[in-house]
Length: 89
Image (cartoon, rainbow, N blue to C red; front, side, top):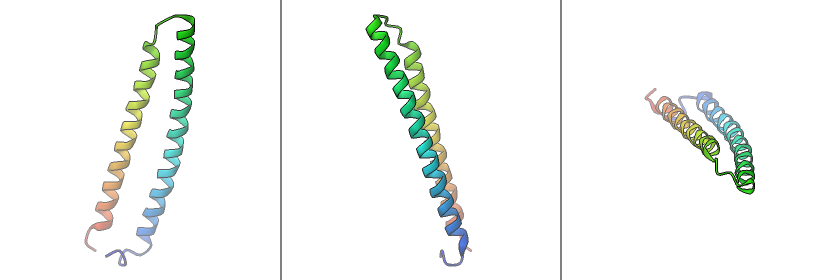
């Protein structure tokens, strides 16, 4: 089944791996930095005695939504790739 496709299968496979690891690394770094800043801000607010955590929770919610949309995009990309690779020649 895949032998008829030739280098197209390998091209899409390596393209998928490249974009998957690049985007995974990018979002991991971004979420790590965001959590560091959010946690330091929450810690500062708790030490100062203020309980205004609304902006911090909004930042956390934003990154949860962005990560969910990003995962959905990858699932859609995998589905489209599988549909292309598994169609009859």
